[in-house]
Each structure stands twice: as C-alpha cells, then as structure tokens.
Amino acid sequence: MEKQLDYDRVTNTLSQYDVIADGAELQGILCGMLSGGMPVSERKWLDVLKDTLNQGAAFPPELENMLTDVFNSLCQQLVEAEFTLSLMLPDDKAPINDRGLGLINWVQGFMLGFGLYQQDMMQCSEDVKEALQDFSDIARMEEPMTEDEESERALFEVVEYVKISALLCFNELGQSLIEDQKDKPSVH
Image (cartoon, rainbow, N blue to C red; front, side, top):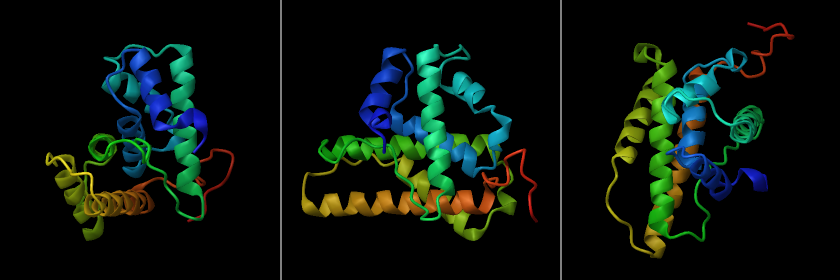
C-alpha cells in the first residue's frame, strides 16, 4: 500500500483532526458500505463518515483529501482481478495485541458500514450470513494474546479469513464498481 495510506499515517492524521477512529476502522467502514451495496457514484460516503466519525461536521480539506485517497485505493483493490484486499492494520512489527485490536476495529467498522447499506439479510447467502456472524464474534474478542508463534499464526489466519469474507460480501452484494461508472453502459 502506498506510504501515505499506511495505518500509522492515516491514524495519526485522523487523530490530528480529533476524529476518534483509527485507519483500520475507517477502511472497515468504507469496505462495509461498498460491500453492503453502496454505489460509488452516489458519493454519499463522505457524508456518512462525517456523521459517524465527526459528529456531522465537515472535514478540513487535508483530511478530506486523505479520506478520498483511502476510498479510491480501496475501490481499486476491490476491482483488481487478483482479489487482493490489504487491510489497513498496524504494522507487523507492532505488538500482537495492537494488531489484534486493529483487526477488531476494522471488523467493527465493516459491520457498521455494511449495516448502513444492507438491512435485508434475507437476500444474503448462507455464506455471507455466516461471515457476518463470525465478524460479530471477532468484534467481541477481548482475550489478550501472548507474543508467541501460535498466537501469530492464529492472528494471521483470522486476518486472511476477514479479507476473504469481506471480498465474499462485496462480490455478492456490492454494486459492481466497474458497472457503476455512469459513462459506461452496464451489461446484465
């Protein structure tokens, strides 16, 4: 991921402007909104962030630019053929509990964003329902982890599961970012 969009830089910029969220939660909210069916062309995502993260107040231009960069980077990842999603989490050198908390924040953000755009769970596949239930369980994790190889492996596996599950939700319920471009006709 581009240097300007790493977890620490985004989190520090949010903090500098008194936004009580970290980079993980921010990216999770955006990914959840897109995965829940928010059309990109709607461009209401910034208003949603103002309401959920900034008590409805407008963001300063520098912060709005950074938020737009995070959003555009995420959209690019979601349309790439390799289905690669880089979660904005603390660096691998950070203590394991910081990385675990970052993952919990990401998942909580995803569920918030997803819930804003997808209220009809009846149309969701069993796989999506199961993934969302698992996300709910991950979001409530409170056990501190020990700095050992087994915990590292477990955290890695949960991060990979979250990536795959987020892509599953996006692929099933998200509006096609390619078809969503207004100047291109959509093919059904």
